[in-house]
Length: 134
Ligand code: AMP
Ligand code: ZN
Image (tube, rainbow, N blue to C red; front, side, top):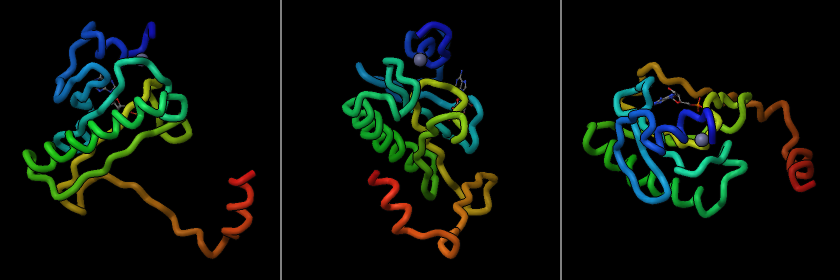
């Protein structure tokens, strides 16, 4: 897609530090390096997010993410990692080409924060379940 930075990386029009590549996807170092080894896995074909991507492509991207994450955790000496994707600006997506972040974690006191607030006392799970089911 024109003017998509990740399409340009996939097409080698702009350089990326490539960790893994096959016919369908590419893994390359995230410029921000939230932690050392922070890597993105993208499909070469443009999809705006996981929500609109071909399910077969999603499956392949996650399969590759698992493989690359194991390589990173082992060779970087990480204790674990977060594997996640942001869908939509409200969820923090800034580049609108589906990508999966692999963020190695070395120490629980690092600077990465994902806070999941416990709202269990304020919500009704059955109401929410009914709503999801439609
Ligand atoms: P998100 O906020 O989930 O859309 O993540 C987009 C990520 O892309 C950010 O972590 C950026 O650091 C990263 N990024 C943006 N441009 C580039 C680039 N040219 N090469 C590598 N990573 C990039
Ligand atoms: Zn794109």
